[in-house]
Length: 144
Image 1: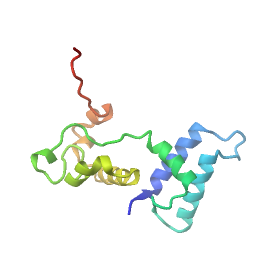
Image 2 (image 1 turned 90 degrees about the vertical axis):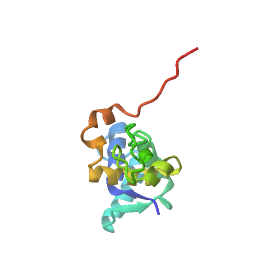
Image 3 (image 1 turned 90 degrees about the horizontal axis):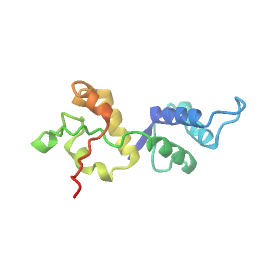
Image 4 (image 1 turned 180 degrees about the vertical axis):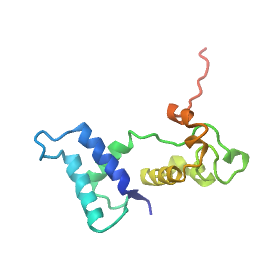
């Protein structure tokens, strides 16, 4: 079952703290309140992840707004799964993750991002890190 990791909730909280700072140091924006409630419950229950299904709607909308600001894909346009590798040397995703990426939920994508970042051995994190920083490559067609 897809789950959202506590570090993503922290990142979303920081995103909203910057986007909608407290006017008086006490009052929180609705997005922050919703995320803070989930975060507090996770800390209280010693949970690292919370299921995407059943995530409170307001908190999910706030998390999703942060998520939409993150890179969609770890692809750096060097795909070794197309050459038969089970794990892509370029981005670190498995063949199945590469193939099913468009249909994966946001939590599934973030889970994959977390795994490949923690492993840190894909080319996107070392020899081609500057390419990864540039973002996904697009191909353009010549105009007629």
